[in-house]
Image 1 (cartoon, rainbow, N blue to C red):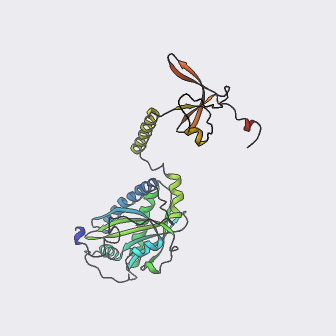
Image 2 (cartoon, rainbow, N blue to C red):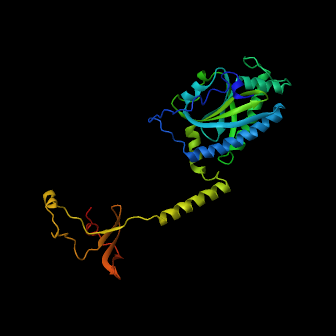
Image 3 (cartoon, rainbow, N blue to C red):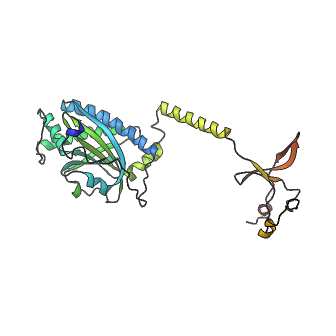
Length: 315
């Protein structure tokens, strides 16, 4: 089934336009490229294992693919969800806070139909019965086990299913302005295709990302990074730069500068006992005394003179 033939609303909650996105300076994006790469590895591992779980548990070919990772505030996330939908409220012990796992109602009904031996196909939109709810909880708990597996390289977590909701508007898991990391997945169960999301509070996952950025690098990625660093360092060391040797500057009046003529002598007031300054881009990095090397002018780098103000204790 191609995206052109999917039912309305199933694959259109994200990415409706490829144009520029507004930037809110009151809420700067904090997810760095390294953070996104770390999360991508964890969520892709979860998606692969979750697809295998659904295929074996439902006995129908299923697939889960990571579509995007975004940083949104909670209000934006809730506004993008359909109604009704199935939202699992999850604790990720020992991490503080509450995470959300959301699946379309049509996908949940299809999964339950397959678990009960049905063929899938179009499903009614209705609340789950007392028989269906334990089946859903068991499936979600198995999926949370795959989430634990996906994140074990980052942090050991023990996901626990707290509750199941159907309307995100009535779910007050976080404050409207709280920043969240939202992973969106393309979910396929047999012929049923939809989007599924996982919403994790930003304050919950940021400490984990900050201390584990380098852990998730593969050997090839680490070798590529080290090679890039060596090439960059070698390029900087061989880059030509302009170096100047200058006397101590003086102050002159504008009319004196305008009246200067060839042959005029300008006293520099540079002490003969003080070495000259060696500069790059107006930054003094060494001192030297003038000299020559053969027929060329040269300078000899010498120890930097001590600052009299520091020696006397004056600021």
